[in-house]
Every structure is written in C-alpha cells, then in structure tokens.
Length: 150
Image (cartoon, rainbow, N blue to C red; front, side, top):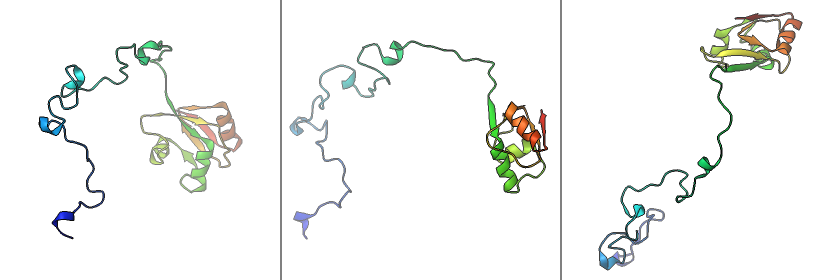
C-alpha cells in the first residue's frame, strides 16, 4: 500500500456524481444543469403536494361528499370478553367502573364507555358504564351481575 493506491473505506463515500456550480471548466457550471429561467431553476423551489403541472389536480377533480355530524358522540367500546379476561387475571373481582377502565387503559378519563356484547361473561359483576348494548346487558344479568348506567 502506498499513496498512489489509497482508497476510502467501503461504504464511506456516497455521492460520486459531478459537483454542480463549480465553474465552466467542470462541465456543470453556469446554470448548474437546471436549464434556463423558471421556478425549477431558482433556489428554494418546491412544488405543491398533488401538483399536476397545471392540470386540475385529482383532489380538486373529485367531488366532495358526505358531512360530519357535529353532535356525534364517540364511544370507547369495551367487550365482555375483555372484562372476563380481567377477571381471569385477578385484576377485578366484583365491580367495574371508570377507575378500572382507566387503570387498565381500556379508556381515558374523558371518554364515554360503551359495553359491547362480544364474548361471554361467566363472573358476577356490577358493571358501571355510560351505555350498554342489549346483548351485553342481557349477558351481564344472565351471569347474575348488574348493569349500571352512569
């Protein structure tokens, strides 16, 4: 090894292209391969997302539809099989309320909780929530529990 055959370590160099804007002799001076005039030749140019060269962009061609109901209530659903899992793991024994949902990250303190009827509940529980589906309420009462609406 001597000074005539030194090479950089494998993977240490990335860009082996000709450097732009380094004088006419480099072959990439003058306009620096950007052409003449126009937005693309200027520094700081970036086109808008979805720009289609002046053609009407897709997001403006497609019609708007539907609406958003400002009075919609968003419920956080908790299924019966989730409650049964908590019973099996010994986390809850007799009653379930907002503190239990928050502690087990089933809902946050500001969310409205709705009990849903997926799975089966074997334990006798006093379940407190904002809303219940008919199947969930029936399943809780069939297991000998109580469904309390907040």
